[in-house]
Structures are given as C-alpha cells and as structure tokens.
Image (cartoon, rainbow, N blue to C red; front, side, top):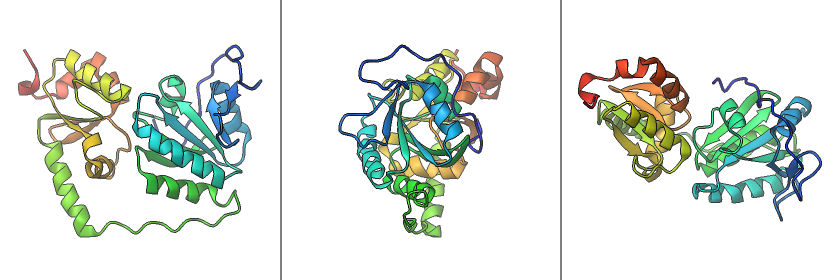
Length: 264
C-alpha cells in the first residue's frame, strides 16, 4: 500500500458506548496529556483526518510488545510539547482495518498524517528519528522552531553496513527478517509470515532484527522497504507480509523458490 496518499480507515459501524469513554467513542489515557487519545472507534479517526487541517500523530502499539513501553514515554513527552497536535494511540491488532490502511507490519510504528496523506513515518524504536519527524511536521502548527537534524552517516560506515546487509540477505536461498524467531515470534506479523512459509513447506533462514538495531534500521534504507517482516529469495526482496499473503494462494511464491529450498 502506498505511503504517499491513502485512505485513513475503513468504514465501520460505531460500537456501543464504553464506560469512561466520551460520546464520540474515545477515551483519554489516565494522567496522560489531554491531546493523547486512545482510539475506541475508527470512525472518530476518519472524521478527524477529514475535518482537521493540522497534522495528526498516529501511534500504533500492542500490549504484548515490550518495545512499545519506551515509545509510550516519548509520545507523552511529545504531546506535552506539541499541545496543539492530537496524538492517537491505536492498538494495531484490534484495529486491523486502520493498520492495513497504513501498512503496519510491526509495532511500534508512528505516523504523522495530514488529511489522507502521510508526511512522516517511523517504524520500530528509533527515538532520535521519532523526535525529529514530529518536530519537522508539527513544529510550525505549535508555533515552535524545527529541531536541528542529526548529521548524516559517513559514507564509509554506510558502505561497511551495506556489505554486512548483503551477506545477511544471502545467508540462505530464502531469507526472512522477522522480530523474534520462527519458534517464538515477537509480533503477530512475524508469526503470520513464518506460518505461511511453514505451510508452503519452504526451507528458509531467518534473522531476528530485535537482536541488531544496526541491521534493523539499515535494511530499511538498503532495500527501500520501511517495514518488517521482509522476505528475500536468492538475494532479492520479495516484499512484506501483505505481498507474501497474496502470493501464496496463487502459487506465485512457490514458483520463485529454488527447488533445493522446497521441503519434500
């Protein structure tokens, strides 16, 4: 799904009122800044994006993902600084339609949207980039100056990392980059892609991106693919979970797999 311009959410009927929630189907987290909104009804998000001229921050999280705890604190700090900006906390697996609309394949993911257009995105735990993205997108609305950008990575360091990434991608004919291991996936999206590979009887290698932040961040730029999981066949990027999910039923995926990587 394109991240340049996309529909914010799918249509859904409004749920029954929840104790402690507002009449619009949202509730604010206890002791959190008033501009942090816990999403209870995706129609509220859709209407907000349609009607609001200013930027809106969308924070996709999951209760089981410990890595979200660090981002939770940063989101609260940013909400206190950018008081004119609304921050939506969205439980990724509960609101699958919203997650699909924004191509969320891992948590935490933070998106800055304006109307139906994405103007900023941070996948995973990358605090400096998150702070910079929110500053770049929301400072003007809040009457603040943009935070100076962090310096670029030296060319020689990038070349060394690219060599390492190429080696990782080619460790096996079929290689998948996931959160956790095939036996113990650390996110629902990784669990699903591992299940698809196993059901297709494909022999594959894997890399746990949670064990190496350099690979985790570098591979996004190297392959120009911002989310995880990522599947490679013979060193070439196939895509993420959504693409693999479409390729399995049609038989297109198995046709790409070398014969020696197909289990009898």
